[in-house]
Image (cartoon, rainbow over all chains, first blue to last red; front, side, top):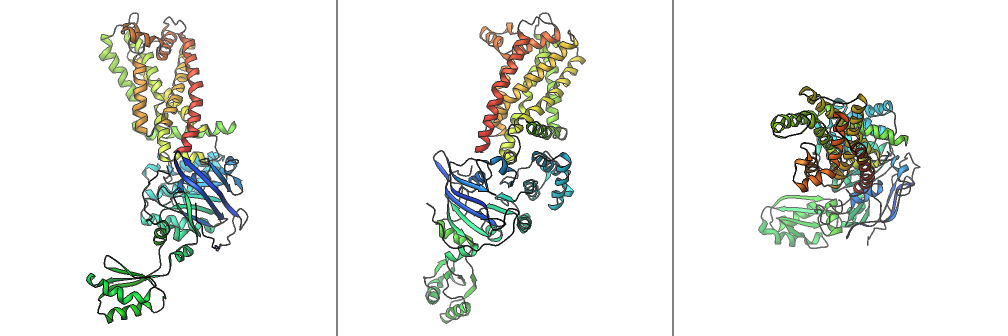
Length: 340
Length: 255
């Protein structure tokens, strides 16, 4: 079962189009199996209006399956889902009017132009042709696609496709947005620009649930992170809270001469509670007290005549968090096929 | 209901808009059937004996029926592509009529079928095909063609949703439909086949539809084939449309 943190999480009070402060998304006891595989195994989530929840986990952890249930694409085996107060199973049709989904694969019709893609989506939301065209033009301008509006999406770059896909999710101005691995496969620049767009949306009051396997993405975008592994939420909290669970800051010392590792470990041991470890010529330790530790370390190493190539303090990353929580690194491959 | 109609039209439009932009697809709808007509008439035609008819008169109704049955292929390929590319997810996350994705697809096929029928018929008329029928019969023949093509679009819709990739849809569809159209009276008289094949050809719905077309356009003795052909087309739609829609609901939930 899920071992969730009981810590009180600081919420950002952002007024949203629903009622401020209330849960825009609330999920309890969500379960979904595919044959023998329990892809989602008792997930509970709560996302306050106007905030971003990052669902962080490796491939096959159950992220996509969860999003598919929250967006009415998949019926849960058990559990309750409420999005903007609507039941995702019983009121699926009404709910579809209020949510936007941008998927893992940019779901745009390659044979249509950018403008035609968005106009089609608008009309399928029940807009008239003129309304849909107007909305399409607005979105194309906002996502800097106006120049490409009349070209078939086939010729778009990966970043442009993602922007078009995100624009399609926003056609009906949904108060809640689901983004399933929005930047997977994008180059760093497109990634950054997509992050900025998402941040803009949140500033305007949109509630976002995003899945990602990138720790830096969750770190940057999410107000709150739920770490999911093998279908259950194994930890939840702000990025800082999760990092605190792993422990304090780390000192990393790169040695001139690897042969001196043992001497260095002995010299630095008093700075930490646990014995320093050495990996590929880098001595690592979790320091007890941040202040003055660098000077102290240099002095201690100098005293025993150990040459230092590089030395630095580092906050634990979400990578460290993931490793600590799951016992395996974040870039696991799809082992149980749960996301398909 | 109004929602279903308008959503269907939006999807049909989506599928037709791409045509003028994809020269390869347009070639498949126009040049390829013409090529087959010319090959059959001038390569095989001299060797195939069709008592009572010129081969070109015999062939045109047959080859149009074969062509229209294959017209639904775009539905199989298109749906399969939409599934793998995530567009079906997008559609399902929208508050649109559920059946519209399939209904729009199959409706678009009717338009492309009409185009390739027209190309084939014009080719036929140029190389010597002539009607022996009233205007009413000719029009009824067109209706039968479009209806039969529509029925096959639903069969292909089911196929496209059931397979794992567009490539699989392509080869499976070909394996299923190609022999069906050849073991019929479309290209040669059924009587010229070995007994087992002749038996199959006689009960093959393709034969019934081809015979109905020959009766409507050439005044051939029809028997029950005109009614039989319409009955087959309606029956195929009645069976495969609900199956495809049911499959769409389930398949889209899994992908």
